[in-house]
Image (cartoon, rainbow, N blue to C red; front, top):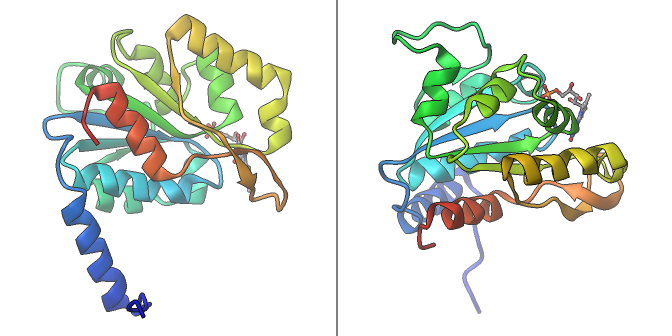
Amino acid sequence: MGKRRGTSAEDVASRETASATSASGGFEGRTILVGVTGGIACYKVATLVSRLAQRGAQVRVLMTEAATKFVGPLTFQALSGGHVATSIWEAEDRPDAQHIAYARSAGLMIIAPATADILAKIAAGICDDVVSLVACALPQTTPLLLAPAMNQQMWENPITQRNIQTLRELRGCHQVGPESGWQACRTSGAGRMSEPEAILAAAEKLLGIAG
Ligand SMILES: Cc1cc2nc3c(=O)[nH]c(=O)nc-3n(C[C@H](O)[C@H](O)[C@H](O)COP(=O)(O)O)c2cc1C
């Protein structure tokens, strides 16, 4: 009979260490921007940021004000080992404006979860929060990967569908998910954010990294 998976803190820590060891490498020398927007799935993005850091990426996290209602910036600061930007007005000690410096530094930008709101804003060219502003300033040659997450009605709303189509067609955005399944609104349907491992796999594919 197989050994039962333990649930003590030591067992969990040892599994994290094993996962970190087996997941190491691939993203060295790459700067990945992770834009976090205000949905329930924010908590899953902590795992994504941790996995990217374990794989050698320099991860820079940007959060909308709504995202900070779901997960505190401190969580992402600890997992990424870097400053978390939550405002467009933060000064950085460099000649470029903060958003230009972020945009220029990136090999890839991931927005996860991507709310209906952020899809609408980026598709309309609105830049009044740090995630939409950096996404707008991102060079066209830098891939932008969206992981939408929302209630099924919001996802199936023709305006949301038009916005995602605009982002794909005009900006060449890449999309992972959403999946169908259990949602925070306690029903099953389309709109559930892809799991962190699926987002990581999509990022690897875009950057030509062997998984
Ligand atoms: C409890 C709660 C959960 C929410 N979950 C989502 C969600 O999963 N997806 C979504 O698009 N909006 C969701 N919203 C609405 C967004 O938080 C809201 O539209 C907000 O303005 C998004 O701001 P942002 O795009 O700047 O982060 C939720 C709101 C609340 C109060």
